[in-house]
Amino acid sequence: MTTYQIGVLNGDGIGPEIVGATIEIFKTAVRKFEMGVEWIELPMGWDGIKKYNDPLPDITKKALASCDGWILGPHDSAAYPEKYKSKRNPSGELRHTLDLYANIRPSKTMPGIKSLVGEVDLVIYRENTEGFYADRNMYVGTGEWKVTPEVVLSTGVFTKKAAMRIAHAAFKMAMKRKKKVTIVHKANVITLGMGLFLDTCREVALQYPNVTVDDYHIDAMAAHLVRRAKDFDVIVTENMFGDILSDLAGELVGSLGLSPSINTNDRQAMAQAAHGSAPDIAGKNKANPIGMILSTVMLMEWLSQYHKDEKLYELGKLVETAVFSVLEDKICTRDLGGNATTSEFTRAIINNIEKASVSIKTR
Image (cartoon, rainbow, N blue to C red; front, side):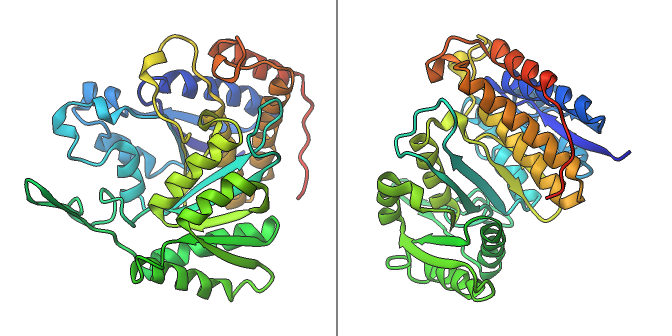
């Protein structure tokens, strides 16, 4: 029996609560399938600072290099001591050093959750390594310069290689869905950088003749999401635009607190909920773990495809179905209008999984 090694980085704020809930749920599901999964807890955030004087210590990065994937809890880097603020935060450091070039963020209507835009099922493919995010677009250095106390230069980086690989990832997903890709850019203003991104995506599109392709400027796309989100399927865009659009889409279908994501290269994947560490409710048993749970579902689906192991896909689907079933029963945390604590919500999902029958289906 294959044993998969999954790193566990609890993070800061509500991180230990939502990651802990996620692991408890998945351990229950793993037992149903009699699978081998080893959960490897590694220091990150304040835990890393206290133990190793580093929010992402080398011991963690080295261990992750041999993991099949990992779960990253939220970090509260804004509260770290000043000496760490000039460095990449743990999420940015992992994306940069491990070349996790694709940030995949679905937004989907969920049972029992009020959507502002009706039934929606879309996914955003965000290029994750360059653009205007200066902490991850340079080999050495931060990508920003303070020329004088009142003048700052920030560099945006756009390469054909990065645009090509995120475009291929988006088009491959589109072939499994509704065969439609929307490219989002600002090539009318940033003509060279965004123009390169747009032209490269169009070039890749020629290799997928069965996929319908359109494109929008970022400002128009924001308006279109609000007005007709249901018309979109796969959206591909650069780093900063993808970050903004995915947060908007998450709120439109219910709440950013529900939004899952994974970050991938061609060998590994990192599950990371789209929301932050919510330090104001940390330790109060109020946190909503859905974003983290569904991010881990995405991780299992990615690992299933990579390792050609259908059990991993069914494992993820079992957990996802349990989450949706509990929401249908109107059991939810306070941020969604319910009165369940984190632990009560977690227990409801576990009870649902324990009652479920499982089988391995061939897709």
